[in-house]
Each structure stands twice: as C-alpha cells, then as structure tokens.
Amino acid sequence: MDIIVHADDFGLTLDQSKDILACSSACGGEGALNSTSAIVTSAAFAESAEFTKPFVDAGLIRMGLHLNLVEGRALSTPSEIPLLVDAEGRFRQSFAGLLALSFGPERIELEQQVRTEATAQLQEFLRAFPEARGRLRVDSHQHTHMIPAVFRGLLSAVRSEGCTLEHVRIPAERLQPYMQARGVRANVPPVNVVKNLLLNWLSAQAANGGQPVAFYGLALSGRMQHALDEEFLQLVLADAQERGQDVELLFHPGGLASLEECPAPKLSGFVEFNLSPNRAHEAEALRKLPALL
Image (tube, rainbow, N blue to C red; front, side, top):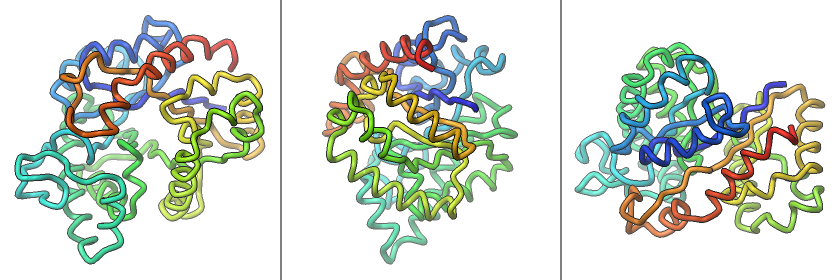
C-alpha cells in the first residue's frame, strides 16, 4: 500500500515552502510528508521551486500542480478569462460561484476560460519541473477541479500540453473512520460534513465510479492534527487495504507569517486559513505521524 502524505499550497512564500519541506524526513526535515503541490500563481513560486527541485529530481518528494482559480491573481490576461477575474486580473469567483457557472448557460465559456488559465499555470509549472510532463500530478485550491466545467477545462489543458497524468486527486472521502474514532469525531466541523457530501457527489461524476486512492483530509480540513489518532489511522488503513487502494492523507502545514504575505489580503476566509495557528499544529502532527503509520 502506497501512503501519500500530502501538503497543499506550496510556493506562497519561500519561508512557507521551506516550512512545508521541513515536515519531510526525506528532504532533511522531520516528518512523514512525501508529497506536495504548488500554487504557481504566487510571486514566490519560481524561487520556491528552485529550492525544492533537487529533492524532486532525486525522487525524495512528489511535486504536483495545485490549480488555483480562487485566490490572488491569474496568469492569463483579464480579457482572456473575464468569467474568472476582475479587470485587474484578480480571481473573483468562489467555489460556489464556479459551481453555479458550471451548471448555467455560460458553462461552455467557463470551460474554455478554465482551459486558458489552466494551460498558463501548467506551462509555468512545467518550466520549473519539465520532467513532470510524463508523470503529472494535479489537484486544486479548494478542490475546484471537481466542478464539471473546471474538470473538463483542466483535462483539456493537460492534453493540449501533451502531459501524461500520473495522479489527479479525486476527493471522495468516507466519513465512517471519522465517526467511528472516538477521539476524532468531536473535532469534525458540521460544515466539513456538508463539503464532504458535495465533493463525494462531484467526485463520483468526475471519476465515473472509479476511485484508485482512498482520500482523507476533507472532514478535518484545517485541523488535521486531530487525525493523529491511532484508532482513526488504523480504520483508514484497514478500509483502504480491504478495497485494495492506496491512501492519500491531506494536510496544510505551511502557514503565512503576516497579512501582507497573503495572496488576497482582503478576501475573507482565505486570510484566516492562511494565518491560522492550526497550520503549525498540522506541521507538528506530521512530525509525529511516522510512528503511527
């Protein structure tokens, strides 16, 4: 069984990227982290990628594209993607906004504009990690790639760049281990249960019933330190083994130091998440996780 211990949001700042890699024993840090994905729309991406490339090239950590359509600035010009950004090129849609567009009359136009921006982000990622063209790993900020028109636009961009997909996250998550583990269920926010149900429904459509990896990290998103529970982890591993699947555990260990470092300092929700002390708690959990796996 392959156990993918993953961190989203790599590349927001160089210090944040170093903090993420510090959760990987293989990369000179301490912890179970063996996978991450990068936000290439950040001004610090190129510097963060250069710092990380030796570890990626040596096969010490997996690196993927963290498609971003909701926070900060796009790489495409505003005239190319008006559904996605304002006149200054800042993303203006939330997950809910993209979902509504995906089922509305502008869904075809949305898919085309997602393809444009996803292509730009993919090209930026491949400039830093050209070997990824043959083994591309993809997920997204707030799991927006599970929205039907976004999913189609992303796959179209992947094909247009001649990439071979090694892994695309399908965040279909079973709630049973969270509910059965006595030390975990009280820490699952009700809003995350709603997100779980929605993403399970969207994932089933995207994957056409196939789910190669047992994914966990949504119900405790932003507070995965509570997953450091032996009963929970045993339930997760037993469930995956019974289904003959690998496991992906999603963490967010890399926090930002100040409001000025946030990609969208006026965007409520994202700011609180980026500056949350839970980011440090999740990093500490990653340092302790190897003893439990």
